[in-house]
Amino acid sequence: MKWIVSHGDTDGICSAALALSAFKDASIYFSHPVGLAEDLAHVEGDVVICDIALSGSVYGQVVRELKRIAQGGKRILYIDHHPLPEVFDAKEFPAELVHATSSCAAELTFTRLMKETPRQMPDDMSRVAIFGAIGDYLDKTYEIEALLNKWDKRGLYLECGIMIQAIDALGRNHDSKRKVAQFLAAAKTPSSNEWLVNLAIGEALREEAMRKKIKEDVKTVGQIAYVLDMDWSLGKTAVYAKGATGATVGIGGETRRGFIEMSLRSHSDKIEMNKMLPQIVDQLGGTGGGHPKAAGARIPIDKFDTFLRLFNAAITEKTADLNVVY
Ligand SMILES: [Mn+2]
Image (tube, rainbow, N blue to C red; front, side, top):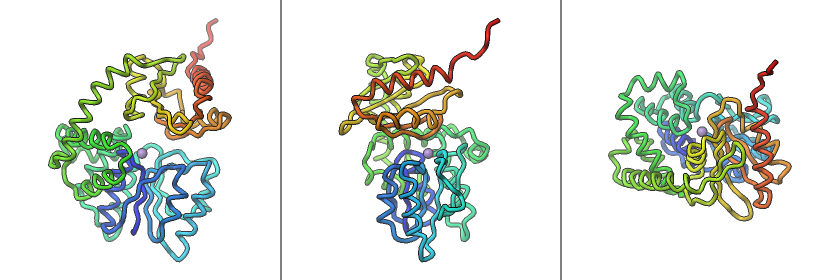
């Protein structure tokens, strides 16, 4: 493999680290669903792509780029756990696809690359698969619980917490995230690295201050709690907005170039945001998708209030008590 293209969150960075431990000379690049086709345009040669959703809106372009890369016998390994778009066609897809929505990308990357011959990835990299799983809240799977049995979880959670907080502190700094992936690929512990420890402690202090600020600033529309422009992790803002209010869905958003970019989080089993969001955001000139309980969206600023109203109506419909009283 010459290239590793991955998502820039914890699961994506862990997946990239796992891929790098198996393909030691590869270069790591970070991408995201909507920008994937553009980023793949620069790729020549074997490539492993991890934790990047195949988005319906750019699916045709992505497949075109994959076909271009595959020409001349280049190898493409596409490892992902986001729901596939409706236009997806397994027969036409020009790559080896490793896909399951129930596991994180790091788990899928680990299990797939342990079967690679010759196997380059050391056993100790199972720890990085666990970090990725916790990062995506997908650590309750059969495979991850089996891997966890080989470690003492009490010490491992410290390592994982250091790494996740450090990654959160890095925001969009891709050069630093690449360094984290390279560090993890060497199977070293985050606690052995002063840079990561200092980043993590700083982020933990910030988290406690932000958690309290979110409690004061949070607004609600029906079953949605939201906070805008906190200048902090959108995902964690969404989690604390939800936690502070008891809302069904939490949103952390920020204003960027005429749009509200947002992360959405829910705990409700009745809600599938990856299916609900596209139906609403399409009519508002936005984009949105992700997982049932953790999603992202982008809405024009002047449509944000309409979005909240429509999305709350959709949530209310899904969570309504359907029992009929006679
Ligand atoms: Mn993921």
